[in-house]
Image (cartoon, rainbow, N blue to C red; front, side):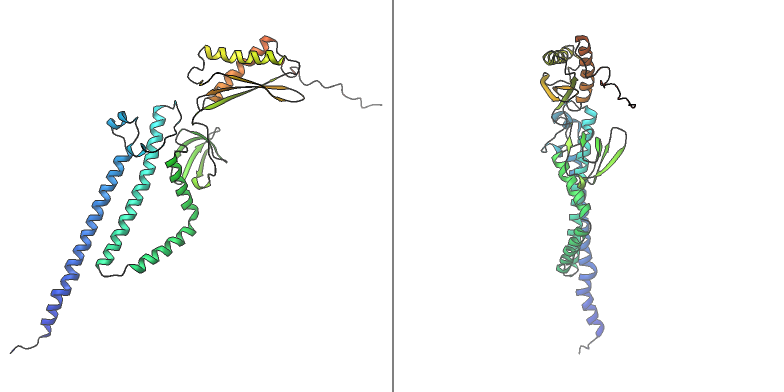
Length: 317
């Protein structure tokens, strides 16, 4: 006759439930962990390949990393290869870091939820709590979120890059680094400005497309305006024909004529379309040459000997 033994019940329980908790479920969690690690490694390697240049790709696609080929590029024409490559590499690296972070977070969330489901935990409350925490963090760190979102859209649209001359409102100068949260700009005096991307409400990029060299030329009221316009325009054309600005000039100079009249001067305006970033050098050279031409042609400058004041009033009666 069979006698009841409590140890048999315990052994049976361990053989069914215990095997599930001590062997099967840990193995399932371990399998998901290995899958998550492998998946993260593969996706990160793919992102690295898309954000880096191979020698063959550099020759076949103008040096662009594969990630940037579908995106619009607004790099200034005539920029050096070194600056262009640095601009592209920094843009690709920053976008790649965003993709890597998104992949890592997504895989981590998937693994945690899968592991909790395997051990029998109801994940619905965790998802609801995560949503509440996300909303709270969104309100508490909205400035940080705005900086990152602005940086992402700025990089995707290529509003500016390394080497561009920009006006960001409070800071103007040459862009040195572009990040997701902060852009650094060095101004003409050498000061390095750190500008949060979320604080940039408008961007003036002086390195895209073309620039216009604007020359304002003051002359005296007694000067012959037609002759002054002719001398200024001819001097600009002669300088271009001599090849002084051959690589910088995009269109012929245009004399717009009288731009402003004051009680002291008549201001003439001459414009020339040039390569971006070269307008100031062209303005300096042409200003000097046109002023010399005015002197040679006898075109009077406004008050060459100082403003004529009448005799000082007598203080005695």
